[in-house]
Length: 356
Image (tube, rainbow, N blue to C red):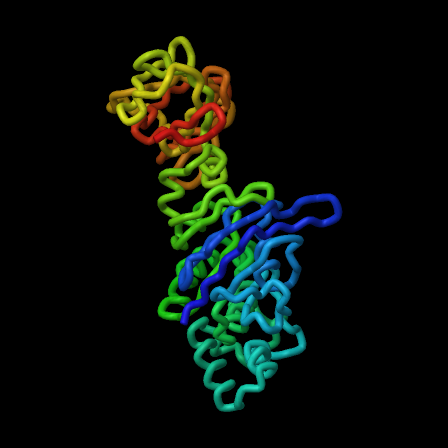
């Protein structure tokens, strides 16, 4: 049976500093739960609280409705994988994977069967007799994953487990991870600082900032419709473009020259100051074909990355970024024209709450 995990008013203070503000969060059982935020957002601290590695300063943690706040980590049926490759250096890959089963004192035959099955699943069968120091970084991390998964723990915590791998290995394991947990009665919590990784893994996402959960829900839904400007900023890489705008009657104004109609869905809002947010890939170099809002900017930096260009530009005194397919080689200080996908714009109140 899949475990339900709920945090009820959980907070964490260290000295006089608050690491986690009071947090109430019911994780989605039996799927991926992403903790998305920058360094020091509170992702690792939340995981350590769930694992029992640290006690909360206040609140309680429930597993299947049972208060486990004071229960030791050894009794929580939790497996955790860290960003660093944590394996026993003097044990073979086989012995590393089998180590939690030895602690559980399972029969040797079952131990062997589980280790072999996990090694096959993670493509480690050819390396079972090797020491971790004889493996590549990807193989070491697969070993750490195998050791966590072989326990068949109902809760698995993955703390940025792919961050130290090279690009190719990260891509491979990102695709494999959801498959590894498919058809398992396992609730997964996965911490990452990369919005693209959250989107690839799917499931549900909690956006975190400075020890606070700003939003929690289906990953794609939060990406498309963030409740606050802060959630939109957390869930955007490159950084989302933002600006204050003014509503005057039926139009929004970014400047005297940059004006567009207020979308019908929010036309009834009062005149005044609001905020707009636009993801970089919805601001593209003008191609002469699109109708709608166009902006002129002064190029500050132009980065060509593979098959796309990141163009940092000054638009009406604001630093915005365009993420455009293809190679666009602009000189610094040159003028460029950009198309705005108005239908993709996100609108927020002056204090950052999303408009309907």
